[in-house]
Every structure is written in structure tokens, then in C-alpha cells.
Image (cartoon, rainbow, N blue to C red):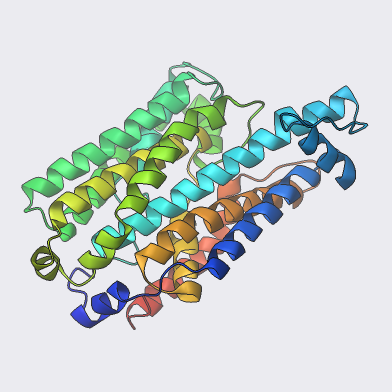
Length: 356
């Protein structure tokens, strides 16, 4: 744990560079390129010009004949467009949540799963699947709702346990690890008692962005907006926290209040993302650290850019998952794990030399 971060490093973060036009432009460019690639590339070959015409035709007040058949229009409007939208929001939410946790806990290894969100969501989804309560799709399907409830419940338990242990960030993180271990054991027990659904459960655990309409993006959208607005609102306060709790209090910032609000907002967004996409790991580690190394350590820079680059990263990872095998689709969690596992090792090694 790095709760005792040197004051000098925190002061450097407080003085950190402001968000510049070039960085925002780079993030927006990455989002546009990834989204357009997600709309064009796929097993159903559709010319680029026709895709552009179909997108323009969807803008109110503009009428363009794309020349697409009804089937091709359905592929763009009902499959690829909602999938890209879902990928952008899931990636942005997980990435922003990871950056928020790292800022709140001053811990470079924190991510949306630190407080037991993954374990809680996994247990909730496992119970829903074993009880045959839904198929994992639709706005009010029991599986994502159970995962959402499980994730939030795990965060709540972790917070209460950490509060009993003395309110420090270290005890909160340790409480999250303990809660995650306990809930994972509960999930294993449920799976062993219902071995006929293990395959279905593991498909969900490995993560996916499969959607046949706009139900999942609509479900996630309000939580995405709330998380982005609240976390970005406290970006400067997180920079102040980087100098230490006592110094932050002397500057008029309430460390416990800021940390509670940011963690709750990040957990809400991460739990919502997990509820519609399954467990997609390492996004909250890969994107924020890459942004931090390229554009600077200030949370006023890292947090907004994590939203842009996180969305682009998830859409790109989904493209790889859809394209790497002929006639089959890899779970997107496998793709992020291939990238994230060695990246995590690099971050672990670098953190000891205060790269973060």
C-alpha cells in the first residue's frame, strides 16, 4: 500500500499540467477512429461510404440515401451502433473508476474491482443464472440487475468493514480484499452445487459487449453520466489529497468526505458497467496509467482523458475479440487480460520507483 505517499510527489501532482487542447483533441480523435472502425469492420461487409451515408441519414434534418438494404441498415442501426455505444460507455466508466480509485486511495494498483465489485457482481449473476431468472439481455433482465445489486452490496459491506477498522484507506482496501475473497468463495460454492450452469456463468465472467439493441446502452447511460459528472467535479480535490490528508485539511479540503463521494460515484458506475458487460478486467489499470505517463499525473488531466481513451480502448479491444478467430468471438475479458496482465506487472515494478 502507498498511503504514505511523499509530500513532494503530491505537490507535483497539485502543480500538474492543466488539460490542454492537444490532449483533448487526441482523445476525441481516438474515440472517433475506434467508433468508426467498430461500425465498418465485421463479418458482414458494408462499404465505408454507405456506413457514412447511413450515419448522416440518422441526423435529424438531414436526408441521405445510403443505398443499403434493410438487412444492412439493421446491422448498422441495431447491432454495431449500439455495441459501439455500449463499448464507449463501459470502457470510459471502468477507466474513470480506476483512475478515481487510484486518486482517492493514492494507490497505483487500485481498480474498480478493489472493493469487491467484481466478486459481488459475479455472485449476484451466478445466483440469478442458477435460478434460471433470465438470459442476460434486456433492460430489466434479472441477471444484470442481480449483478448490479451484488456489486453495490459488496462495496457497502467493504465500506462498513473498513469504517470499523479505523477509516484509513489501508483498512478500506484490506476490507475490500477480504470481502472479495469471501464472496468469491460463496460463488464457488454456488457453482459446485449447480455444475450444469458453470459454462454459462463463465461466459458472463469473461465479459462481453453483445447487444441486439439499445436496452443495455440505455440502462448504463444514466449511471455513466452521474459517474462522469461527480468524479470530474472532484478532480482538483483529488489533486489536493495527493499532498496528504493533514495538508489537504489545512487547505480546506475534507479528505474523508471527498474520498467517500468519489468512491461511491466510481463504484456506482463500475457496478452498472459490470452488470451489462460482465467482468472485464484491467481497463482501470491500463488506460489511466498510460494517460498518466503520456500527459501528466494531475487528476485534472488523467480523469477526463481516461473517459475518452477508456472508451476508445474498449471498442478497439472488442474489435480484436470479434476478429481474431474465424467464425467465433473471444470473450473481451480474454483480450484485456492478455494486455493487462503484463501491464500490471510493469506498473507493480514501476510503482516501487515512484513512476506514479
